[in-house]
Amino acid sequence: MDSRALDGDAAENGAVAVATAADIPWGAVWGQADAVTALQEAASDPSAMTHAWLITGPPGSGRSTLAYAFAAALIAEADDEPAMRQVLAGTHPDLTALRTEGVIISIKDARALVERSYFSPSLGRYRVIVMEDADRMSERTSNVLLKALEEPPERTVWVLCAPSDADLLPTIRSRVRTLRLREPEVADVAALISERTGVDRAIAEQSARHAQRHIGMAQRLATDAAARARRDHTLRAVLGVRGVGDAVEVAGRIVLAATDDAKALTAERDEAERASLLHTLGLADGAPVPPAVRAQLSALEDDQKRRATRSLRDGLDRVLTDLESMFRDVLMLQFGRGDELINTELAAELGALARGWSPERTLAVVDRIAETRRNLEQNAAPALALESMLVTVASGRTP
Image (cartoon, rainbow, N blue to C red):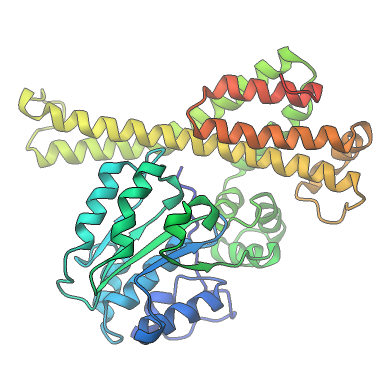
């Protein structure tokens, strides 16, 4: 699943004012007042402007939302509300955006962005290139961007988004101005989710805490009782792992649940895309597909498979992030810090674990989970990677 947050600032001041055209681009940005001020200044003052930006922040902090707000402010005149809304909708001709739905950003996609960056603006003040998930570039792909970032046309602006500047090559970092977003507090996220969805404040607080302040994930947990139950069941299952047999069984259940979740998230969209393509090609539903158009259907299916792979990887990564939070809580208890637990609902079980394990063993497990996340990013077999990690949970030793 695409885990980007649906950030909004309606709750920030407790009231919604009548927006002017100049306010429109920033209306969806929540909790990042300093960043908004910096970008507003850059958009209105050429002396504060630079040709390439890197917006960093933890997942759910609103990197992409801010990037598109900045693009709207750069492209449209201050009083041109229709153009701003067009940019925010992703349909303005002077906006080029890349949001990868695969595991990595391909060299082909990067080259296409570079090619577009050399076009002059057709209607707006600037041409803006937004690259979401810039951390998903390999070194070879990053090298494709270097010259374009170093010597862009006068009215082209690049906006890259990544969790951290450390996720990009030093050669990329040296060519951009970095803007770091703040991480919201649990209480702030809970208030936003409660106002946005109407859920009980206690559920909103629990969801914000479990999501580790990721707004989009907190909203999903708050509004999906099955997702909350699945998370709790998974953590308790891992706490119950006692040997290799348990590790294999629990790993299989985690992969199966993540696979089913990924299918549920992508199946409806896949079918809609296929139906739309067939309609565009003039084919009735259920009609045989002529050989001349099979290549187009095959290309669509390949894209959908890549998206499904990423959705599965993202789902497994969320599980591992939850496990990291649980064993982080164990460490906190081992060092006498029981007042800042993420998983307070498991306080009794985690307390028993903290007393039974040494801090060294807990650290070994946390390190193993982090290693498993990296291995999955490198296309490791999910079941084998999780089984190996859970053996470390059971034994305290790396297999």
